[in-house]
Structures are given as structure tokens and as C-alpha cells.
Image (cartoon, rainbow, N blue to C red; front, side, top):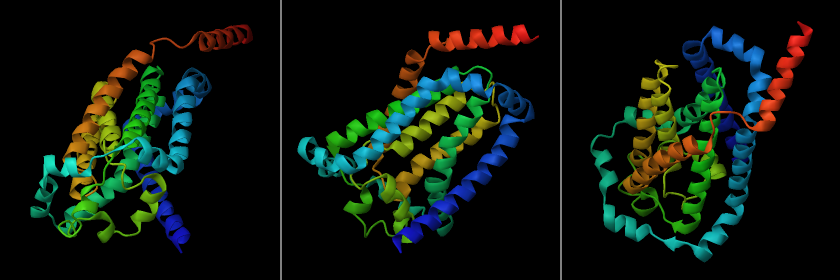
Amino acid sequence: MDADVLTQVLTQVAVVVSALLLTSIVVFVGRERLVATAREWRSRIRASAPALAGLAAVLWLNRVMRQAGPGISEFIGLHMTKAFYDIEGEFVLVFQSIATEELTAYFSFIYVYGYAFLLIFPGIAYFALSETRTFRRLLTAYSLNYVLGLVFYLLIIAYGPRNVMPEELTVTMLYDNSPEYQHLTREVNRNTNVFPSLHTSLSATVGIFAYKTRSSYPKWFPVAAVLAVSVAISTMYLGIHWGIDVVAGLTLAVSCVWLSDRLVGRRPTAAVRRYLDRRLEDRDERE
């Protein structure tokens, strides 16, 4: 039964996110960039191969650590739930005063569907740019978020508000209002992975990139900003993260964007340059 529900939820997410992506490609990317991408995609893939391979390796590592992580964390981690609660108190309960069915539906949608869309679309948009550095920097920033987030999850053991004060949060709890989503989140996360909030850090990373590339995609920046802020708020509104987790996520995002700028060169690697030079020579000979 769980497998059937998971399949149903994954199908819903795939359909909704695909529709959002197709619409956004038309609105933000445009025909001219799509035509150029269709012509140059091989060289862009070649130029971005190290960053793509790095992100794939990090995602694989995260999948492995979902199984091995709890044991390692119990051995080396610090239990911080009480400390977070003592520092922050019941701050997240402020959202109970503004909670409505409409807001709960909105933030539930944002947390699941909006977040997935927000992470995927920039990859498509920046791959469509003629220069590959922005795309490579985005992939590197994603990788850094996941790697550093994994380190914190191993070192810091903490449960979110939904586990500490479930009775006070029943109005806005994600799983009380949309219980089917727990089958999805269980596949990619565990209850003690709260500090920092990767939902916040990755969304803020996208928001920062949208600001930096607003000359290329001016219409995308305000949309990305609204979605990124909504994701951060949703993590607290739905009782998943503490405010401390969100602040840590924002700090992580800024750090990863800064590091990606230093790690990713403005020029492709020597191997990629040789490949591109050969391609140009072959084209010149054919002409």
C-alpha cells in the first residue's frame, strides 16, 4: 500500500512540476535560446561534465548516507533538540495566529511542488545560456549545499517542531493536512535532518543566482524571489524546521554561492578546451 501511495505522489509531482517547467521555458527561456541550445548542447555538456559528475556523485553519496548516516550520527553527533528549543522557544507558533486553510494549502504546495520546480528550472535556464560558467557554478553550489548539509546532519542531531510540539502545530502540520506527502519525504530525508534547512539553503541559492543573472532573465528574478521566500516560510509554517534552521540555511546558501564563484573558473578545463578546438578545426575543414 505504501508503495502505491508513493507511486501516486511521485506521479502527481512529476506531472505538476513538468507543467510548471514547460510553461517557464516558454515564458523565461524563449525560442532563440532553445534553438541555440539544440545546436550547441554537446559542447555545453562537455564543458560542464566535471560539475555534472560532481553533483551526481554527491547525490549518490546522500542516498548512501540515508542508510548509513543514522548509525554514524548516533556515534559522533550532538543531540541539540533541547538546546534549539531553549534558544528559540515557541517562535514557530506565531504562524498559528495567521493560519488558514488557504495558507496551509499554499505552503504545502510550495514545500513539495514549488521546491522541486525551483531547483530544476534554473538548471534548464542556465544551460540555455551561451556561456556555461553560470550553469557550472549553479551545479557546484548545489553540490556544496548537499555536502556541507550532510556534514551538519551527521554532527547535529535535532528534531523539528512537529516532533517537539505536535499538539500546538496541528493546524498547519504538513502530514496532518496532507498525510500522503510523508511517503515522499521519507524517501529523501529523516526526522533529525533539520539543521540547517536544506529546503531553505537550496531555495536561497536559487534566489541569489536569479538576482545575479537578472540581466539575462529579468522576469525570472521576482518569481524566484517569491518562491524562495515562500519555501523558507513554509518550513516553519508547516512545523518542519526551527527558525534557527532557516537562518543556518540562509548562511549556508550565501557561503555556497561565494565558494562556487571561487571554485569555478571562467574558462573551461584544458581537456574541454582541446575538445572545443578540435570541433572548431573539424568544422572549418568541412566548410
